[in-house]
Image: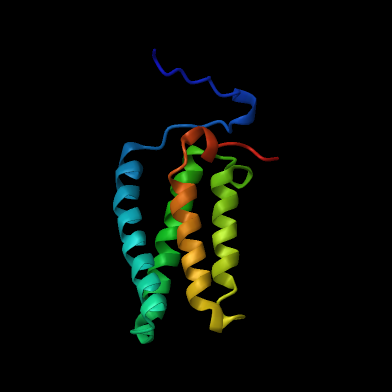
Length: 132
C-alpha cells in the first residue's frame, strides 16, 4: 500500500515565486554562517564561558539573519503572515528578552534555538501556512 498525501488547500498557502539561483546558493552559505554564529552563542550561554566575544557573534547572527529574511521574502512575499515569519518574530522576542532578564539567558537562548530548529524543519506546507 502506498502512502498518499493530500494536496494542500492552496487558499491557505502563501503564493511563492522563484528566487534567482545565485541568491538561493548564496543563502546556503549565509545560513551555514548563521548557524555557526548562533551555535557559538548557544555554547557560550550553556557553558558560561567566552561571553566577552559575543557582541561579534550577535552582529554576525543579526546580519546573516537579516539576509536570510530578505532571501526568503523574495520567494514568499507574505512571509509575515506565514508560520515561518511568525516563528522569526517569536525568536526575536525571545532573544530581545535577554537584556531584560540576563539571569535567564541560557533558557531563553536554548528555547529560541530549539524553536528555530523545529520550525525551520517543518514540511513546506506547514511553514508556508498563512495564519491571517
